[in-house]
Each structure stands twice: as C-alpha cells, then as structure tokens.
Image 1 (spheres, one colour):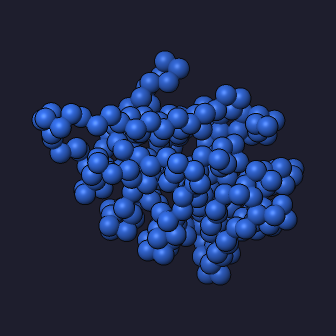
Image 2 (cartoon, rainbow, N blue to C red):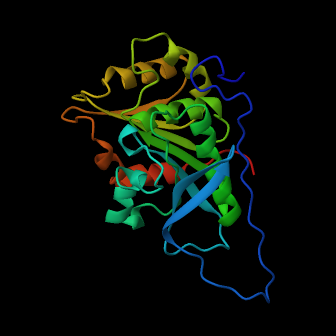
Length: 258
C-alpha cells in the first residue's frame, strides 16, 4: 500500500540502483573526480542542480555506502550548492574522514517540500549517482534536518525496504495540529533501523513532533532510538553530524539479502 493518501503522493515511486560497468583491464584509467561535485539532471522538462560528495579515497573497485541527505527549508533554491552549507555538508567540510561514504544532496525548489515531485527528484539524484559511482545497494542511508527530517520520515515510510537506516533530525510528520499522520506512518517503519534526534528547546519544530513519531513507532512494534538534547534548540544538527558514533552506527547498517 502506497502513501498516496497522505502527504507524499507518489503513486509510482521506485528506486533503482545500478552498478557501473567495470572497464576492461587494458582500458586507460583516470582518477575519478572527488570532493563536492556539481551535478544536474532533467526531470519533466526541467533541469535540477544537485551536489554529490565523493570521498578523496574513493575506490571504484569497491561498493560504497551512500547517504541521501535532505536539507531544511532555509536551503531551498536552484543553485545546487546552498544545501551543502548547513548540516551534513558543513560536517563534511570540517572533517570528511568521519563520513566514509558517498553523500547525495539534492536541492528542493522554493516553496516546496520533500513530497511529490521533490521526493521523486531526491531519488532520481540517487539513481543518477549510482550510474557514475559504485554504490552498495544494501547500504543506502537516509537522513534529513527540519523540513528534511519530515522528508526522511515520509520517504522511509514510502520505501521502507530500500533504506538500511534512517536518521531524522528535528523532524516531524506534520507540523500543524496532529491528524494522526504519525500513527499511519508508524507501521511501515517498524523494520527500519532508526535514530531520531531533537532539541527540547526547539521553537521552530516543537520537540513533541519527534516524541509523537517515536511513540507511534514503538506502539506499532518498532525499535527506534531517540536522543533528546535538554539544552538543544532547533540547530542540533551540528551535534549529530559531527558525532563519530553517529556515523559509526549509520554506516554499519545493512539491508538483508544480496
């Protein structure tokens, strides 16, 4: 059952990760580009810019974990780079060695949320990256902050079998008065490893929004780890994304199967 009756409205949403073909042994080789890389793709006649971070020690002979990062409302735009300046992108600039993974950072257009076409865009950016780099389909992780935290909850509920782990930061199912969205999403999230984070003093997204999601998942039989920072306001993402233990946990997760 898809969540087309909720907010996400993605009746044909899929995620196809391909493995780039290995060049012949006698083919000339060149070092792949690494660092923050500007990319574009065309969807429904429009061109969208996004960014991919590739670690300096990327080896195409090995499958790499990949992190799909959904930014918050303040980084919406069409330049392709603003979303790398807050949260995960900033953590990478401070110490990229903490994150031995390829990171895909789509950019949501102004006035939109990570639902409908923007959710599809995020997945298309991930698929496009899989054509260029050797990604491990068992280690696709999803995280997002604030508005991107909502996107992480919704996208994970839409495709729970695709993500090895999900980490919403100061997120929410619905920002306004509750209509039972958390309870409807929760049964689809019980088998996904989740760590959720929120600041108790958050004035932008009330901490009750994460508490509500966590309680609903636990009530549905899921096992979600929740960290609440008693002195934290809205911008707790630096604490999360600069924590080596967070990355150790996230990148250790694997989906079952080959």
